[in-house]
Amino acid sequence: MSDFKLKLVLSILSGILFSFIFIILAFALPVKDAPEPIVIKKPQGKLEKIAESMKNR
Picture 1 (tube, rainbow, N blue to C red):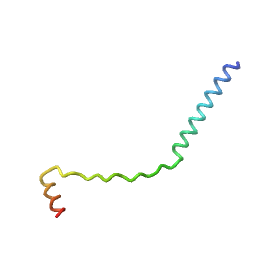
Picture 2: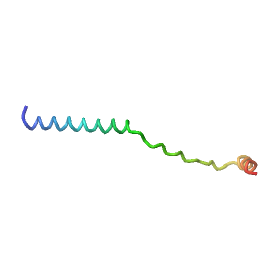
Picture 3: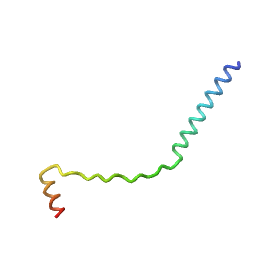
Picture 4: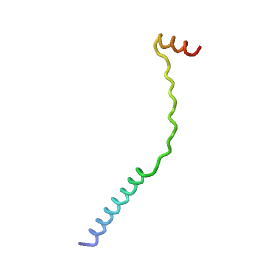
């Protein structure tokens, strides 16, 4: 095997190895749980508006 081919194979293998390391770290490291935003649904129909006004009395 020539020197160039050996360097090419080693660089490809090292690139694959580093990419696998980063992929594994991405799945292994915990992610901070962000609080879910509270979505308040606006009443759209007439009956929903009436029901919402009755709740808020």
